[in-house]
Every structure is written in C-alpha cells, then in structure tokens.
Amino acid sequence: MESSVSAQPVASPLAHRLAARLKMKHLLLLRAIREHGSLTRVAQQMATSQPAVTQMLADLEALFGAPLFVRSPRGMTPTVLGELALSRAEAMLADLDHWALDFATAGDGRAAHLHVGVIPFLPGRLLAPAIGRTRPAGRRVTVTLHEDTSNNLLARLRAHQLDCVVGRTSAILDLRDLRHEVLYEQEPRLIAHRRLAARLDQRPLAWAELIDFDWILGPRRTPMREQIIDFFLRAGVRPPPPLVESLSAKLIGELIAANERAISIVPADVAEELARVAGVAIVRHPFGWTLPPITLFQRESGADYEEKNAFIAALREACAQSRDAG
Image (cartoon, rainbow, N blue to C red):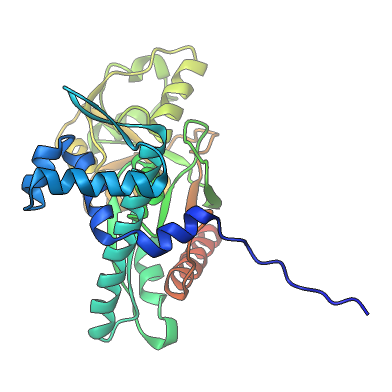
C-alpha cells in the first residue's frame, strides 16, 4: 500500500541561521546605513560607538556569508546581496510598523488599519463607499490614503509600505512581482473655464488651436500624461506645453476656474466632480478613446488577510456600480 506525504518547503541552511540569529538591531542597522552611508553617522544615530556598529555589521555579513557593502572614502556602497538585504529589511520593518498600528487600531475597537495607495485622478465616490462597506467581523477598518503617481506607489507597495494600490496600468510601469486586476475604464473629458468651454462647444475642436491655451496637466512619466501626449502626436499636432503640472485634481479645477484660457484633460468622473465643486465646465466633445484603466495592484507574495480582502471586495463592488451607472 502506497502512502502519500504532502510536500513541504525545505528551509535552507541560511533560513535556519536567519531564524536563529537575525535580530531587530540588524534590521535597524541596515536601515541606518542606507540613510547615512557612513558607520560614523550610523553610530551617532544609534547612540553607540563606531566599533560596536562595525562589529554588528561584521556579525551580519558573517551570518549571510558574504559582504553586504563595499567600503570606500565616499561611503558604503551595497553589493548585490546588500541591495537585497536592504530591500528585505525595509519590508520587514514596514510590516512591523503596520503590525503595531493594527494592534492600536484593534484596541480602539476597529478591525485593522490599512494603507492604500491611490492616484489623484480617482473620484472620491468610489473610495468612500468602499471604505464604508469594509466591515470584517462587523467592525469597521480605518484607512490611510497615500496619494502619488502609480510608479511611486508601486515602489512603496513592493517595500511593504502599502497594503494595495489603486492606480493606472500602462506599458511604462514595472509590474514584476505584482498582481494586477483592471477595475474599470475611464473616458477622458476636456474641461475649461466656463466662458472658454461655451466658445469651444460652438464648433468642432481644432486640435492644432488647442495648444495655444494654458494647459494644466499631470506630471510627465505618468500613464495618463503619456497617453495625452501620444494622442496629440497621433493627430499630427505638437503636444501642448503645460502652464502648470500638478497631481491634484482639486488644484487643477481651481486653476481652470480662475483662468479664462485654462484647459485640461481629466477622467470623465473626475470632470463631473470638478464641474460640481470647482465651477469648471466640461466641453461636450467625444474623444473616441479611453484612458489607461484603473487597476488594483497587490504583491504576488506575502501574507493575505481578511481586512484587506474585505476592502478589495467592497472596492470591486463600488467600481461595478460605477460601470453600471455609466
């Protein structure tokens, strides 16, 4: 009679050594070296002597069995193994920070505290219901929203500083080690000062003439800005140089409302919010193309937990309702 044994991952000798000998002080040492690049300054920050810091680093390199840094008069440069150790140490320290915040949140009667990265051009009417509906075991989570470009947010996701990211996918993003799921598509809208929008609505748009207005756009090397540039190039028109670059949808709305020559392209749902709260107007001209899709990003590996999954389920529901309403 044959017996079956479930396969279990076999820990390497290094994994055994790390479990037995790696200490919190080693992680803090690595973080301090990355910040300061000098053992003298690291010793000052850690309130200890330089020989003690040097010995601590020697113990850590002996644990890994290889140098982690190259010493030179200009400072300390991480080796390939050192870069990996620095990255893992930052992730572990970030996880510990989140762990402590979760315990404090639970002590206040909440379920957990989530750190969610979001791009600026995301309507609040999606995030608000998703956060409100996230109630694992009947308790509401608390959420910190971190607003930035997709590229910067994904770097923070990899560093375990964020639990998930709601961003915009595109070919310019590095998606290694990440899972991504398209949530919904956004159509672009041209927004302008009310008087300018009224004039533009009276005739077909001439894209060559639009470059003469005061454009307010997001930063370069963001998926949305790259697609807007590509649209002008495909139309055979030189992309407009922006008067202002901003990540803030609110600021873009205020700048346009205050300038009769100001103009921008934003997602349709964001345009509707700005028309309501900032007093801008939407130019009723169909573009015939969509922006890079709003996408949920998560790490491929790492712990999964109920609170994050509950938030993601609520976010999917809010996005589905937005698609149905559109």
